[in-house]
Image (cartoon, rainbow, N blue to C red):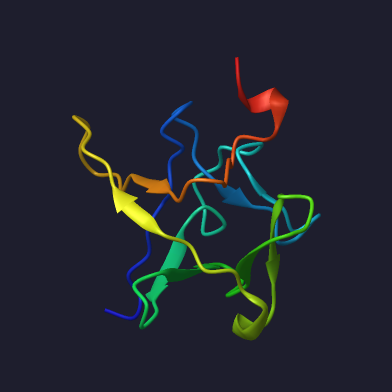
Length: 112
């Protein structure tokens, strides 16, 4: 339905993505809270790609020239993402692998 949201976990480091929409607007793994800022609505486009929006703020993901993902207010400015399901042994989570060329674990504090 329209209210269905997903959490996105980075396959490489098992961290959840979170949109800091009340701060610097960056999507990263810096915060591991369980709130509506780490739940996202996926809207499939005609070409099979997706727009991703934060459940809490309805702000859309965009990849900047610096390759950092941030959120913007308008879907017209949103980036498109190719999503692929990933098999996992744990239940209750939605795991997806974001398209090649986008590495959400750019925050060195989130990786070991």
